[in-house]
Image 1 (cartoon, rainbow, N blue to C red):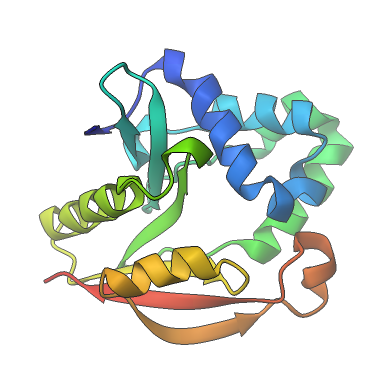
Image 2 (tube, one colour; image 1 turned 180 degrees about the vertical axis):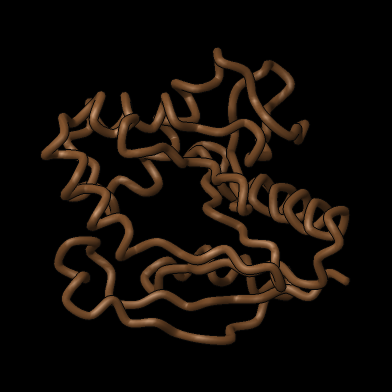
Length: 193
């Protein structure tokens, strides 16, 4: 397995599909239907905000994204969204996604999503990607990495805890749980400095 920062244009469809497989349940009502979601995600992926795991044959095993003041793994603008969903569709979708958004702070490096191919789970891919995120945070001078995990994702939370992340806050989604299909998320922090 090799971990690389960034990806090529040829990797975009596989990354978009894997992202949608991981987060489609949560984002389906805001970005669906699937064909449009995949078209949008594929065009707005930022290689500057990703670490990718590939096997020896070049198959994508997983991705960890991060968010900075310069962008995120899955970014995009109103114009990008309007190209796929039309102006009215882009407006209400962006409004919903803004309610779910996480702020970028200067004090902590923000991991913005990690997802591993189903057939690669349990093989250390997530661990290697988390190590890459921690190394990047240190290289950028951060003392801590921050992430948020939905409460229903107990497997991911167990991995984060094994890697030394500790819970620092829990946030309820309130009525948005009917849109995003999860009740709460826990903010976790790893000391890297």
